[in-house]
Structure formats: C-alpha cells, structure tokens
Image (tube, rainbow, N blue to C red; front, top):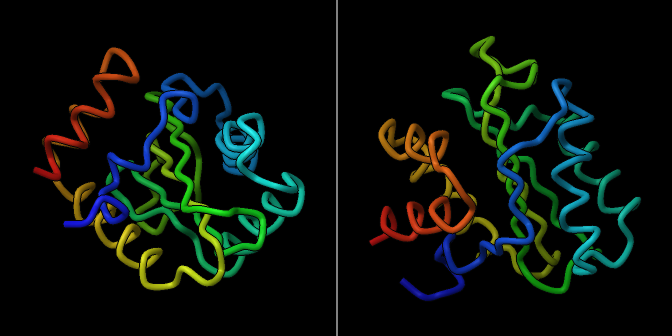
Length: 155
C-alpha cells in the first residue's frame, strides 16, 4: 500500500485533539476544522469550513459506531489533510443510528485528487469498522498512541 493511501501517514500530532469540548455537531466540526486552520495548511479557513458544512447538509457523515468522517474536496488544500477530534462523552450528530459520535476524522482533499481521496476515505471507513480498534482509539491516553494504533491496524 503506497504511503499516500495509508491513513497513519497522513496523521499529524498537531491536527489531533483527543479532548474536544463541543457537544453539538456544528461546534464540534468547527473545533476539529480549526486544527487545520491553525496549522496553516488550509488557505481560506472560512471557505473550507463552509464546504465541510455544506457537505454535511447534503449527507450526514456519521457512519454509526461512534464515528463521523466529514470531508470536502476543495481548492483550500494543497494536499490530503486529516484532522481528528475525540469527545468520549459523545456529540449529538443526528446520526442514522441515533447514537452520538465520539470520533471525528475530518478530511480535506484537493479537488483533482479524486482517486486518492476515495482510497483514503475507504481505508479509514474500513479501519473504523473494527470494534477493537475503535475502542482502543477511544481509550488512547495520548496522540502518539492514537497514531500508533492506526498504524498498527493498517499493518
């Protein structure tokens, strides 16, 4: 598997917040998105965040089982970006299963990187279907452990 398709290779410690405070969907999305905004990898934060919200309006990105993968194909990114937010109490996300979301993996991708984008989203969704991995990510004591867990799960 090439490096660009590996989720762990796209994770950065400064884009992962294991203690987001927001309990409401849009607030939580903003809190996660701001991690990309503050690292300077998104050219126009407001435009990027508007695209994330628009995508969410079109189709809820909560997959069930504690997980949401909000994403946007956008001109605001020069490379595939992932930000992560965790709230172990859960965020009201209007998910189909009615359950709160505890893990948010936000993905921003340049518009032209369609294949890579689909591969990353697919790989992430596949990984997060594993109950043991999801529980380990919810229990991870720190960001380094969180990234290691995903790296190990990808083999």
